[in-house]
Structure formats: structure tokens, C-alpha cells
Length: 172
Image (tube, rainbow, N blue to C red; front, side, top):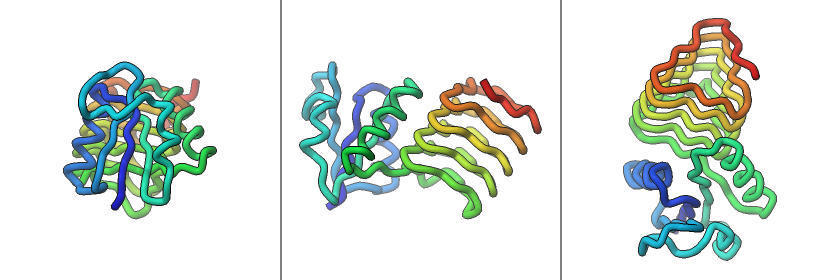
């Protein structure tokens, strides 16, 4: 039985849960959160160590880009598994690379030869065109577009509806 432990019971955590349920990606979902008191929340974030085994994956559902990548690194260093989560309605080219801890939400597109590095969020309807590099921890918000031949800086946030035109090379 495959289990996913989601850290964070906020809006993003519930979105990850919905994607997992839509794609039947895991058999069981467990939430950990330091503040939420819902019956679905089984403990605080630090309790993740109690769940590490060969059938369990971990996803830090935090909107804070730096924090999300820190948790991914912590999971990996603890020997825990971190998935790539892709909604069934998203298109990811077989020629694209999507690294550990990324979430690709409904109707998003990742075109051929694109690289999406560790811990990125490619939100609803976002488009990553060909020959683009999205560095670690980036959040591409709803309906944003990164056109061809761009490199987006680590931990950047491309806002909803924003278009990054060809050869802009956003680096901070």
C-alpha cells in the first residue's frame, strides 16, 4: 500500500490531496501540520520521521518556496522518498525533465526539452515552453507562461497570468 504524507493542511495541502485522489496516485493520505486541528491531521510536521518506510512518500505542501525545498532536502537526507506529483489533465512531454518534489497541477503544460528543477510548483494552466529551465523552488502561478529559451531564477515566483517572453532569461 502506497502512502503519501503531506506536510501542511492549508489550501496547497488540500490541492495536493485532490490531485493525488484524482490520479489515484496513493492508497492512503496522511496530513501533518503544526497548527491545524482537523481530524485528518495526524500530528505535527516533525512527526514525519515516524512514517518513513519503503511504502511512504512525503510532500511538503508549503507555498513558501525556500521552506518547501528545505523540507525536500530534509526528507532526502533522512532517507525518505519524495514524489513528483502530476495531475492527470496536465501535459508533460516525454522529452521534458521534472525533478523530485515538483507538483504539476491541472491543465499545466511542460513542453519538450524543458527542465523543471527540484521543488517547483507548476500551477493550474501554467505553460513551460520548450528549452526552458525552471530552477529549484520556483512557483509558476495560475495561467503564467514561460516562453522558449528562458531560465527562471531559483525560488522565483511568476505571478498569475504573467508572460515571460522568449529569451528573457529571468535570473535574480
